[in-house]
Image (cartoon, rainbow, N blue to C red; front, side, top):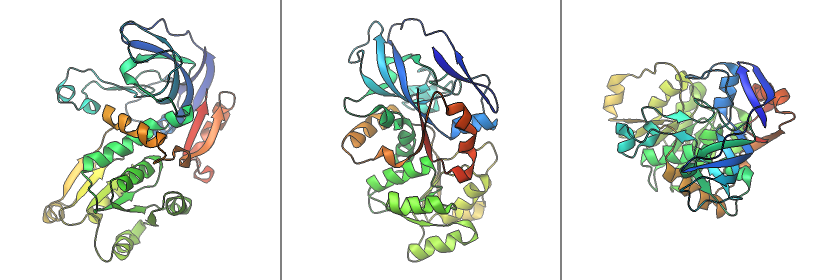
Length: 337
């Protein structure tokens, strides 16, 4: 079957691999139709993705069609279209027993720790499928990205009437913006890139400030001298993460959505003076996926707003490196397999 393998940093290769063997109990074979390409894939191509090994078949944002079901699988059948929840937890560790499978001690992510969906067929646990009878496969491929934003907002405890600042208007930051709006908060974005500032205002209907040295003053100006009660940091930049501590209101919360392989420092007296709550947000939970499908089906979320580029099996390798160029303005790329 057609397969794309990241052999080493900077080198993708088209090849053919053996199809998966028939599904075991509780498993399904799915045909991969659409693959969302995210920052994790691009960082792996660059060679900067933590906890990554080569060679690897990328692809964890998947819109799929069920081909075959294994013994014991119910409510799923051939022809069903689905989003894939790509997190493979052990189900036994302390976090799993507490219902926090996204924090599993032995968590494996499809397309990162095990081979992913840049191939025609893949075998996955049936319980990892989220079926929709109406959504397009391209929409289903973006559910995992949206789930990360949903989970971050759920983690924050954001309530109607609060003010939220989202730092970084990349794909995940925009997903956070969307769910913060759905929570009934007043939402402000911070982004250095002028094109993404415009996208925030015109595509997502939120005010956006430029950040940088004038960021704090700009936030106060928009909010009438106050600071947001919840700040979501979604840049993945150590410097931006550290600066974000200064944007949080007294008794507010800071949620680190971005992930970076570095130490993050903050000034303890100021942290204590504000009695600030610091949270991290990792991946998503099954309930986040379940929440998103009806929102997409009902039109409350328009997944098309994220998609800036599309590619096919025949040209994805030649174009992949260009999406790292800021001038290309690739917000979300979708690959049709």
